[in-house]
Image 1 (spheres, rainbow, N blue to C red):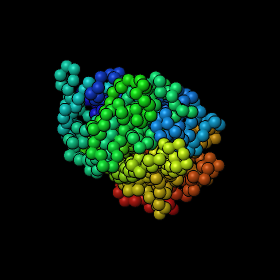
Image 2: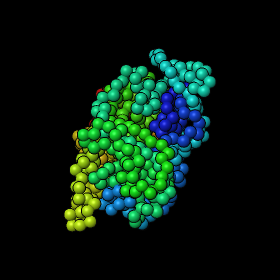
Image 3: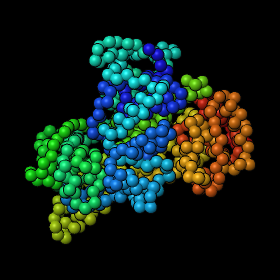
Image 4: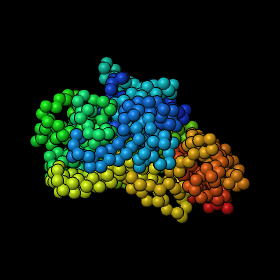
Length: 553
C-alpha cells in the first residue's frame, strides 16, 4: 500500500490535516484505531474562530454551523453560586441563529473574521468531519488500524500496521508520516521527543449527565456555560445539546492532591445546586490531570507530530484543539509545496521553528489564566450566598472578577488572531515589531509573521476567500509594479495570485502598498515597492535560501 502522506490518528487534528492536504491535491491515508461511526466522548464544546476560518476554506463551515445547540439557544457564559443559584456575571454571546444580525451582542461580535467561534460539542462535530473527509477522493480512512512501527529511509517512510479486528498486518509506504495520535503519542516517543513542562497543574473530574429536569430549573435566561462559585464545590457545567445533556467538570483546589476522596454524586449536586430529590443519569465520567507540556521536538526527518501529540494544556477556551488544527494548517501547505515540487525540502524546517515556540507561549498564557481561576475559587468569600448586605458585597466583588476571567477565557481573540511567528526562516521581517497580545486581546497587524488582517471587499466578499490556496500578493496601490515578483514566482513554480485591494477596503489595517500573504494567511513580506531581487524573496519563502532578501528598491 502506498500514499504520499500517512496520518496516524483520525481525531479533529488528523482529519483537518488530511482534508487540507487533499484539498491541495495530495493523496492521504488516515490510520484510525476506532471503528467507523463510533460517537466520540463528550469533550470539547466549541470550535474556535480561527479553526472555523480553516474549515470555511475546506468547505466545512456551513455544514458545522447547521449543527450544535438549537439556533435560538443563548451561548452566554454565566458565573453563579451554582447552576441553579444566584447569577454573579454574564458574558453575552449570540445564539447560533443571531450571528451577523443586528441583535447580536457580545465581546466577540466585532472580531475581524469571516467566521466566529461555534459552540458545538465534539460528539456532534467530529462525525461531520469524518463524513466530509470520507467524501474526498484523495483520502482513504483505515478504521480499526493501528500503526505498530515505522522506519525512515532517505526518500520515504515505511509503516507497519495491524488490523485490530482480524489481526492482519500490512505495510504502508509514504513520503511523509504525521502523528496526530494524542497525548500518549506513539509517534512522539518513536522520534525521541519528550514532553517538557509541568506534569500536574490540577486534578479534574468530568461527568456527562442526562438531566431532563435541569433546563426548567435554570433561573432566567439560560446559558451555554456555567461557572459555579460556592464554598462547597466550584466547577463548570456546559450544556451539550441545549436540552437535557450536560458536561460537568470539577477541579482540585490548592492543596488537594487528588479528587478520589470526594463523593461523585455530592460533587455533581454541589455544582448544580440541587438537592437529593433531583434526578439525573450519569452516562459517563472521567478522571484526568490538567498539565502544561510541550514536546522537545516536532519533527524527525520525514516524521512530524501535531496536536496533543505535540502539546497539552488546560482545556480553556477550546484552544487545545484549535492549536492542533493550526498545527495541521501550518504543516499542510508546506508538505504540499514539497510534494508538488515548488518548495524546497528545507521549508519543512519552518514547521517546528514556527509552531513549537507559539505552542510553548500559548501553554504559559493559558496556564496563567488557569491559575487565576484556581485562586478565584480558592479565595472565594464565605459570604457569597448570604442574603444580606455582606452577601451582596461579596457577590459584586466576585462577579467583577468572574466577568473578566470568563471573557478572557471564552472570548480568546488573542489566541485566535494575535499570535505571530517571529523567528521563521521563510518570513522576511522588517524593523517593526508585532503587537503584543493576551489570551483575550489582540491588535490586527500586517507586520511580517502576523495573521493578515481580514477585511470585507466590495460586494461583501471575504479577503480570505479571494486569496485562494497559494500565496497572495495584496496590492493596495494599482500603480505599483508587481511584475518582478510575479515573474520570479512563475520561474520557481510558486503559486501566486495578485489581488488588488482598495484603501477603503483595507480599512486602515494595511499601511504598505504591497503585502505578500502565505497560504496560511500569515504575512511573509511587505513593502511599498518590489524588492530589488524578487527571486531572492521567492526563494526564501519556498525554503530555498537562508539569506534575507534585499529590501525594496
